[in-house]
Length: 93
Image 1: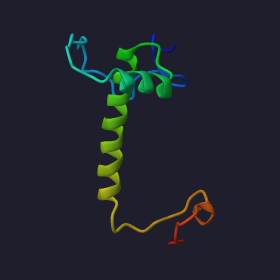
Image 2 (image 1 turned 60 degrees about the vertical axis):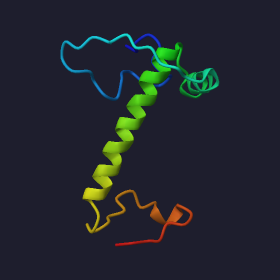
Image 3 (image 1 turned 30 degrees about the vertical axis):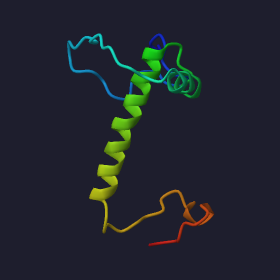
Image 4 (image 1 turned 90 degrees about the vertical axis):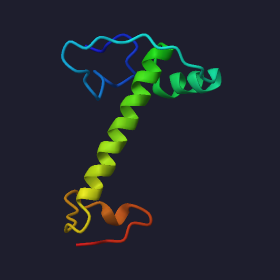
């Protein structure tokens, strides 16, 4: 079941809070236009849900970057057989 304010298609946050951790109230000066656009893009019901989802994306992006860096120099295997269909992708392996 989706949490209230969870972006469409998401069943839960990408990054789970620590066990027993509760949200902390914060006060920030933010641009309303950015919050409105983030809510729209993420399909979030509230500004808090939009910020939570955006932070999840930043954390997930960092995990992807670290994983990609760790794989540098490894042999590439196109397990789906679709690399040649991606514009600008040079076939490897």
